[in-house]
Amino acid sequence: MDKALLSVLASPRGAALFGEIADLGQVDPLAASSALRKAGYEPELVAAALTQVRLREKGSLKLGPFAERMFFTQAGVEQATRLTVAAHHARRFLAAGITKVADLTCGIGADSMAFAALGLDVLSTDIDELTAAIAAENLSPFPNAQVRNTDGLATDFASEGIEGIFADPARRDGTGRRLFSPDHYAPPLDAVWNLRSRVRGVGIKVGPGIPHDAVPDGFEAQWVSLDGDVVEAGLWFGEVATREGLGALVLSSSRDGSQQATEYTADGRDPQAPHVESSAGLMDYIHEPDGAIIRAGLVAHLTNEASGTMLDPTIAYFTSDQAAVLAANDQHLTHSYRVIDAIPFNVKALRAYLRDSKVGRVTIKKRGISVTPEQLRPQLSLKGDNEATLILTRVNNAKTAIVVEPS
Image (cartoon, rainbow, N blue to C red; front, top):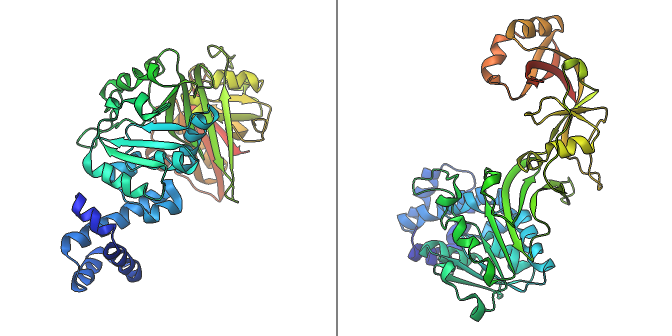
């Protein structure tokens, strides 16, 4: 798609085309394309519209009903911030009393939408011409958002009245391959970090795989999970940072559409936690901390807080007599399991155990053991009417199969 096609898709004629696609319902894309061309729409316009329909379906997973009227690129929908997470970004600037933010790498505009919707003035920039044009369309309902096709790093922040900076650098190369080194981001992490003295606060969205030693000194690094999935890490500096160091934000959705949010942090370096000597030291429950807590390196801290004992110094499981580990707002910070049994892990012994227990179906979790559940399951020769959940892991470096049930 180019800007000319985007202009048509954003016009009344484009709206009519999208309406006709909706009227066709769930039909084969080739049949839909043929029908729309017969209705008088140009092939390239039909192809662009059908692509947008597909991208809007993907975008709805992150942006909900807002995606129905938005425009996307493939890269844009993949990197777009989930709207519920973008709202937390915006609240940091609001809490600092910042009124105008520059979104330096706005992409299709997801973060800028959240900023503008919560009342911030936003200057959104993107160096790619088509991406900037798409962001302009997506942000058109917000009079407090302005979009420019320019290199945001060159912005004169003082003359623009910019008090805060947000950036979401591209983390894929031209072939779509994921980039893990912050030096290879576009723009590189250091290029955004170097702007910190020119504004009151800086926020940078990075991939959750960023190593701890790549976090700049003086920044707050916060890993974010949403309904159990780690979706990003954020680096915050200045007045938008709430502390210095590493932390986690655990978000979970309720059936009624509301959301719980817990910030989990530790003062200073993560302390050491005790670990069991053998499987005989397992207590009534095993807990797997939320992924954001694991990525933030706070497993030992949570273990101590829950009066627990780690299964192994290098494994993110711990055991305790608590059925669940909850935050002050009763949000679960772990996936928890009741311990039923534990045996040394080898295929022959495990197969015999499951045969004697008449287990015909198993759920297999593993951490710290090089085994593929899909390859292991056929080797177990499962027969019977019972079900079991297995945790395959190391207990004080000994490979162990722990039979559990969800708590």
